[in-house]
Length: 469
Image (cartoon, rainbow, N blue to C red):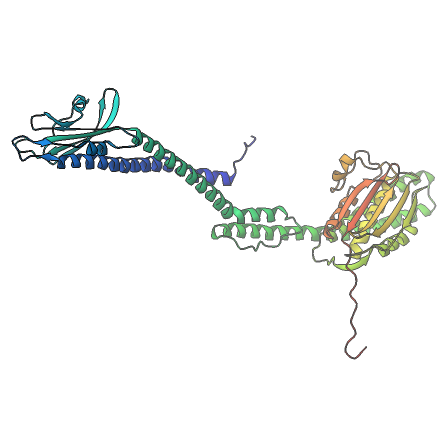
């Protein structure tokens, strides 16, 4: 059953951290908006109450009936407001109008009389106009007088809208800042896990050293588990290499003896009809011996105890290989040539010679009859290189990556190879931090296998000691 797409751990943590934030922030915003609105409303109501107290202070109760006199200047002062219309009404003990706007008596709902010293705030309507009303009871003897002060709601509506906008804007900014801070904190918190993942991505059987980076306490058990796994893999890989080397070593001697016996049998007088059979046996044994040699080379290439930092010259390695091939019988018509130049590098001479041996053997085996094979080496400012080029059928570009895998051959490959030569060469190249490429021939058809290695630093000159020696 196919697995669906997996969500990111960072997104999952961010979602679960953001969920309470998405719930809490609106609730906090509504609560803050209500608190600020009530405070603003109370402040404006206190302004209306101050006007009512001012009017209450002007009531004269010394006579038989309370009375009040408001000058025109004081009237303008009481009604002054830049945004709203202000109305007031002072009623006597019998509800008679003493001063102010008699129309306030038509307020809906109709205001009820208040006891002396009592204050009441309410919303009212006067001729389709919404008003805010404060009603104050004033001690006028037997029954209290009533002071009513009302104003329209323009500044209250504007203040309410402004408070809502400020609260909403600050809430959004707070949510954005908290979101960014949470995302940054999650990324920082998961950074050790990301670094461990990147480190594990570059690990293989050739690099099984324990993880040692400092990690948070929660990741220490995971690191320990990986280290135990690396230890088990290292033991298994070492056992596999030892078995491979032992098996190849045990096979080489009997196979070499068997090949010698077959060649001697072919030299002894025998029925000529046995020649094809003896030749097939000789080729099969020769191929088996070559496979045993390759398996041994593969085990050596994977041996991490081999030091590959020695100073070598690819020209000398190619010269030695050429001298070895000069004593071998090449297929009919095959021409093997060398174009060599200095190519200093750091590596292991035996492994590099084995790499070159596999490249040459590959070319001889697959280039076909009358092939022209050229071994070149040299260096430039970026690398030292050695390459083996032939004019055979080559390998299609789409199959070249697969051809460097073990026991894989091109679909058009001929000959009786095992599919290990290029794989061993690729392993040795990787062991030297080099690069093995399968390229087109310089001219015409064919294949060019090129190894590039980091150049060797110039040799250091020994300084003479103080005695001048």
